[in-house]
Length: 139
Ligand code: AMP
Image (cartoon, rainbow, N blue to C red; front, side, top):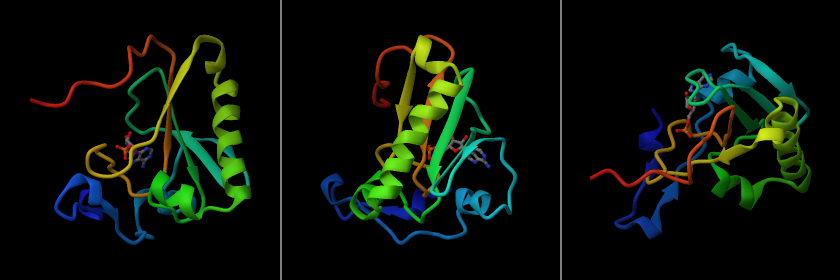
């Protein structure tokens, strides 16, 4: 889902996000229409376990506001939302015990990054050796 949320205008440099879809799965979690395994919440931010974990610890941190991706959020969010989001990421990682052994944060934007859910989310991965950086492009 969400793949159609992004359109390339001829080449990758012109990738543009479409309008926010208020019925995406994370918007529905924020509204309480779909359950989640919540680990943290404040006025601006929610964090919960990923439904399909890729590491022993795999938590998603999302802003409650309607932002498609980091592109959108970094341009339009308030200072309070940005501060809350960044502090929540650090707090959630610390409270999961990940700050001691190490963790990786990752946010996908758009087609080339294979973003699936069109609501900004930062993944926190931890609990094992995560390897180095990103994978190779598919052949
Ligand atoms: P991305 O490819 O960065 O858009 O990642 C989307 C992530 O959302 C994936 O890791 C999914 O497993 C996760 N996900 C999708 N639906 C849910 C859900 N209902 N609750 C928790 N995580 C979800």
